[in-house]
Image 1: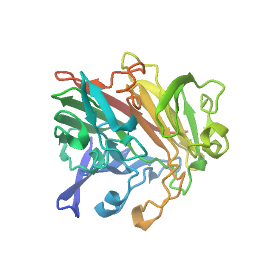
Image 2: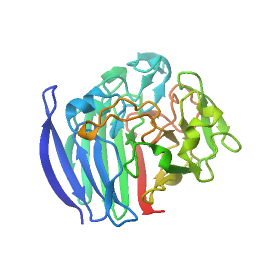
Image 3: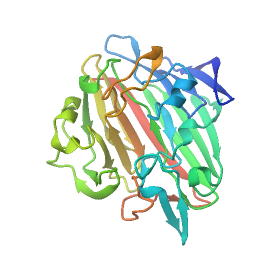
Image 4: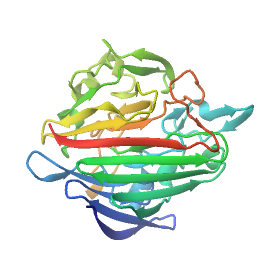
Length: 342
């Protein structure tokens, strides 16, 4: 049984109120905002029998709007990078918002992370909905999105459905920054990844090839300390992990990506998804972002695990997954975050 608590709303300096709700199933609990579908807090059991918040967040809407790290939010209309912010479909060219080097990143300057979503409850969680109009950040079509956060035992389910009335690439991801022990570095964490392929990139993060992880600096098949992010040569250009792993789930089945764990409090988070890719990011450029209690975050203070379509795949059809959502079709993303004691 999930218990709900409606918290005092926050004022958006742009003029609207932001709703806040806390849900608790007795094992894990979370706070969700109507701004950006943000998970502000997520409490899970530790080996000490207490619950700890394992995601980074802010104390007011102004601080959320001041950062571009997408703290806890839904990234969209298209997560990750689209090269040169350009799309073409059936002879029609589209120019998107360019907000990172030459790319459209996470939907542009006013992506889904900065939108006001409608917030309601379900039996075991919350449901948020959003309408993104035709031309929003340059993307074609009216896009309707339904986002469910569900608490089931020791699992957080994230399920997203979307439709559009014009052909448009859609890729939505939950962009929480996980720090499982509340410390000021992710070097107390270990990572293990099942995926056997990853995308090489050019100097602005656009995919150039799909290669095997085996024997490379991106081989994380064995449990690996996060400290290697500043030691392995292949990670130097990105200042740590910021790479998209390719899943082997052509049929869209829920498949294990891998797990992170903390050596401090024993918390382990295992991620499963039906998406063809997962961006693994070591918070390499988090420094300077202001969080709760006005704490200024540092680089490498957290880890992001972002299930998604593959970056720039709307322009690279040879990459796995069909990034283009067409009318009468439904985009379906489901990911499961399982929390346990390592």
